[in-house]
Length: 522
Ligand code: NDP
Image 1 (cartoon, rainbow, N blue to C red):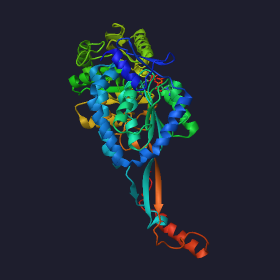
Image 2 (image 1 turned 90 degrees about the horizontal axis):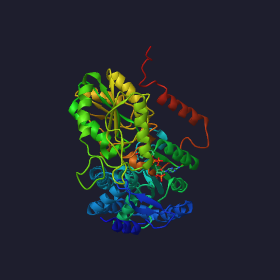
Image 3 (image 1 turned 135 degrees about the vertical axis):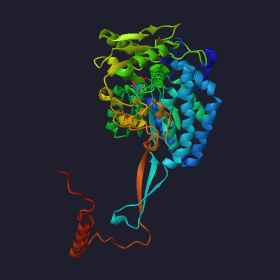
Image 4 (image 1 turned 45 degrees about the vertical axis):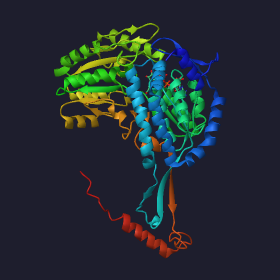
């Protein structure tokens, strides 16, 4: 699609022309494709007012009508597939395949998943209690939408990571304001159009374009904040949420390790390492960021990875199958990647493939880069690089690999390769990460039934699974005493010695018999 034509569509969806606006650049070409308004705190407050006004109506739609909107949006996404792909590519510079597989594929599935599962995950739960005081009463847990949800998203996946969390938040009956990254706001604006055309009432989903200050202003307005981005900014978000006593869910940085044990299928391990470190040019929170290989298969593994990495084409994408590695979306990220590679080389690492910035036309790229002779004194092994780099370290045995894999403040994803899957599962259970794969990587993210979240400094809370929608709700416990109840409960006023003695004896009988207790182990 021609740039001017694309620009006109962005304007129709809320982008603008103003001098104070934020320009949106195509990182693969250097062209400015649109500009968006930089909303201040007053503008965000106005969006919040609108969102709150319409939320009760949206909640009153009920599951059936809400899921209809999601199913129409799924169809809209497929009908407008090419427009969405073009928009994602134009603001991220990612390859056609990265836009199709990891963005369109995710969102299309997610619309259907939450339409099917929101009613199940949020259905009223009837509870049975062992507590005598509530015997004969009806006990219910219901999930009530929190009201107005703020979603702050990063630039690496404008559809999957930024917009993706809005789907369960909306399915639960909330209004949502999405603050996309200033670098990649256009996909969010386009999805606002898609939801409008799918029958979502005006104001239920709104996009607050702007910089970090706009995100900070959003936290001041909403009932819950869902944030994806760096650990540094995540801390600020958590502090702001704590001041307001609102819940927050944080999906933060990662430094995902991959371990290749001596009995692994080396060909599969090499293919997986290259794909999941280079896919999306390494700009994925659960990219493989470092590899530990047992000594006996190290040379074989490195040889195979070298060959595969040399074959990758990097540059501006021109439709399907044109390049494997696209642009670096966020300008400062290129400096981080360069600094990590330089730091490693200065400390003795060797670059077997790549190692340089690539300026192609007006675009911003980094060569697929394989590093060996690395160790944990180097940033490339300890800090989030978020680029197309793969440092590989030789280890003596599985225990050394595990110790090094866990030697990180992060704990998002992890993987282990071995032909002995029982041993692999045991190893995975010892990895300090929110998700772990045996003989694969990253695919856990695609199974929306599985909770996805980080341990350690990689985050708080989960997306996906039952918790991925219940977090946008507050549980309300309801206890219903039947109409034909006693006139007075036995433990209430007036107190009488005989009743108190009886109840005390009863407690002793219930809890004082040592039921189920063994002698302590010496
Ligand atoms: P940030 O964490 O800084 O930004 C994420 C989002 O938060 C953006 O929308 C940003 O707005 C917004 N934001 C910034 N400051 C505040 C604030 N004080 N209050 C509320 N919202 C705020 O990530 P970056 O985009 O700067 O990337 C930095 C690093 O984060 C990367 O180098 C990478 O290591 C990591 N990262 C991790 C991701 C993940 O999926 N876990 C995704 C992307 C990055 P704006 O962009 O307009 O400043």
